Image (tube, rainbow, N blue to C red; front, side, top):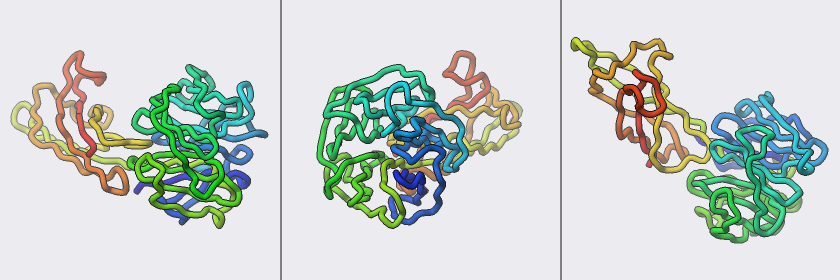
Length: 312
């Protein structure tokens, strides 16, 4: 099941929710002072911290264990927004610039001055950057200043300090102390489908991350030279972050799983997927092709299985 993480300013707390609901399934205290902005990198939660801490922390999964961190003090006082583009961290602070980092590191590889002003919240979906300023939500073309759309968020007034995407709908958090609400919009529009108050949870919601961390398995049967059959089942991949429909490629490294090597001459006689991914089970995985690799094929090693699959 998809989960949602909220970071609350004033209480230094992260709350975990099973889907878009006010019910808290788990929580933990952050290592820095308060929290502004959070993102899911596919395996770990990233949280930015404001003035007084000036750090960005990466937590192990949805736990208080810190895997890594770095300071933002040389650029600005605290990170008010963070997001993950699938490869690199993107963050903003009080100096108006949005910065792209090399992976999760202090190394900045690019920066932009977004429309409106200093960004309050960031999000990423389908190759587009979500940037919020006050109560306005801007959609930018990738990591650029090219504006594709803008509209008013937070219909109850107040500013936005947190944005995410659940694969279909935009999510954002209203940081006004008198409001304290989280919204689900219809697609990427100003129309609100659902919302709930965080007043009873504690603090002000200043960061939101949608978490897809569901594994799917693919089972295969191979006919080896000589007529013997080999059955293999493996966790082929893990889908996380802002995943959408599309076609993907994964490599199955058989030797690492103490399985017999699959030879290029072997024949795949059966392949099927047992998916458990997507928006609370609404997406499907279809395996479109599976081939054994020979020298020079793809990025896998000889004997690996290259599987192409699509999410619909």
